Amino acid sequence: MEGALRLATSAFLPPDEEGSARLRQLDTSLRVIEAAFPQVSTDVEVCRLTSRMLEEAWRSRALAPPHEEEQTTGCACALCRRLPTPPARTLGDYGWRQSAGRPLIAKTWPYRRELDSVLTGGWSWTRQMNDLERDLGHRHRFEDDILVFHEYKRVIDTIDTTRLTQLVEGRLAERFSTNSARALVCGLFAAHKRSVDEYWLQQHHAGSVTLPQTNPLDQSTYSILQMLDCLFWHVSPDTELWQEEHLASLLLCRVIDDMADVRVDALTGEISNFWLADMSTHTKALYAACAIALVKYGCMPEAHAPMWNTWLMTTTIVWMGLTGRHALWFDGITQGLPSAQECPLCDLQPNACTGILTHGTTLTIAPRPTAPALSARTAELSARCRAQYPRTWPLFDAELHAFEALHGPWYGNIDSTWEILRRTYIAAVEASSAAPSPARARQVQEDAGVVGSERFHTLHDPQTGREDTTLLAYMFGCAHPHFLWNATGYLPTDVTGDWLDG
Image 1 (tube, one colour):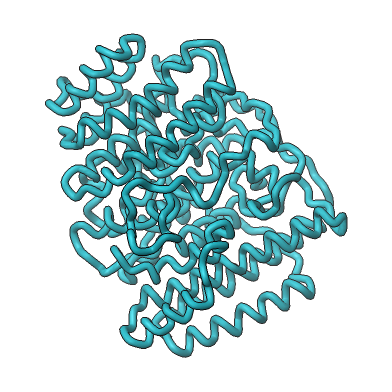
Image 2: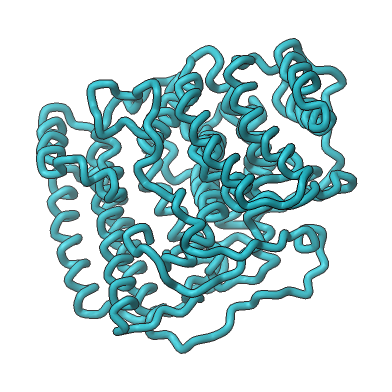
């Protein structure tokens, strides 16, 4: 796959009056931060340039002459042949997409009510996973999460943002933190992006412009936008911030999120949606396969040594599974499972995909390894499945053998992991054995959120949390029947819906 940044980008229209005014207001705030904290001058400039590109991309999308996006392809490669047929969708199918999330049983910050949600609980969880070996001081510092308060309006409603900002600025004055200063830049970017999205969607609803279903983002523009969007959300240490391994994981982490959110973003008009970008179906399939290969890479012990942020992909896929946002729980359960014989997705080899932004990356398909025997704890999971779900057991057992061939012996929490798997992965596989049913898919989706709120705290355990997270990421991300791949068969519909979620 060719490196995204080696491709030529499109020329955009300049911002309109309102866009220019928004950029001037943003620049005023950025200058204040840069003057006080020159250490984040690179972040400030990236925020400035990215925000301008957003303004230009939205205006180009609104005023560009309509054109038809390629919906079919004659490609007969191993990946394109296996693209799923997407189900028809209506607005009523998207009630699950709530920013606030389901309340957690075990509070991440018991003394802060507004952080009591899966959304912000997952934030802290990712930081703790990264911070176990070398504590960079990110683990309990909520000022690093100020961007959450700008980005999610359903959370903002319960928060006094003025008081919070004053508190953050006061703490910065007392004890300087480069990461905390960067969080202020992140918050400004998230707030600006939200205001740009809302402005153009309001224009669409008012009839001033007609937003086409396609947008002007080519492959490289999309990649820059999504990498930077995720960079603002997942801040790593200065020494790693611009390393290629880090940037590749950021891009593919956003790809995974878009794979699940694709149809709702089509309905609400999200500008930076991956599947609306102007690229071929084959390229989209390659990106999806890269995301699966990176999930597999994240299951290997050697994947977690070089960088602080290497748990980002695995925690993202598990968080989505335990909030009901996962592709299969949400997107419907198809009748019957695809064959695992000579399956290119099963046989994708682990890949860190480090060249996906620059020189490119090569995916390898080869027979996947399998462990000759299961370790003690994994064997107990297999035994429970055989006793309770004999129809699903052969598939489940085979995937455990494949997982341990990548990961080595598993030392996780048997009880909590089993409870999660039986109500997510196993429930979905069981449901696939009967006739297709949207209601049954919704039941799996809703119970995934329930078991997530019940069991999410176990993933914080310093002894077993990483082991549990790795196994869940494998089962949710790349185990047969490839629940992520289920979301790649995208079909657009009219741009309508709740613009506040757009």
